[in-house]
Length: 117
Image 1 (tube, rainbow, N blue to C red):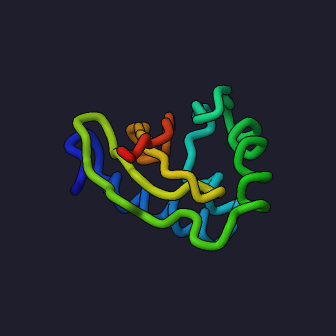
Image 2 (tube, rainbow, N blue to C red; image 1 turned 45 degrees about the horizontal axis):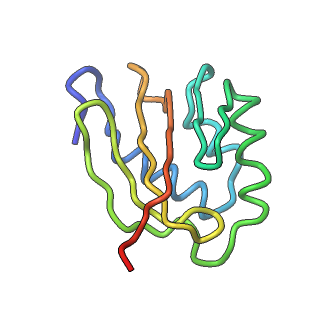
Image 3 (cartoon, rainbow, N blue to C red; image 1 turned 120 degrees about the vertical axis):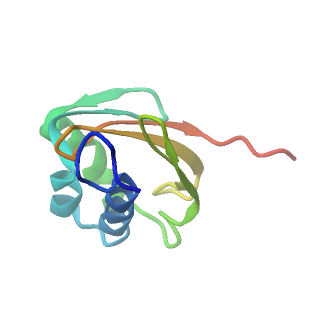
């Protein structure tokens, strides 16, 4: 899927994001984010800019469990991409990605996925 606003593939960027997370490649992950990016995390808390994104991701990548960052579903939305996956600790989460005109991640917001018993 190519964005109608710009010439980038938002799902491709999410795949690159997953690859960077799986490979514990912090620099590659940070490079996918806009300099003014905002990360709204599942545990409550917001991280701003490259330094904030790094502060959020550095310990998570360092503690990532085997099998983390496995995809359950990915689908385009009107203003971005929605990803259901296994977080760094194996928790099922849904993350919404919004992008800048330049094709960088502008905002991510996640929420736990509650599964029926």
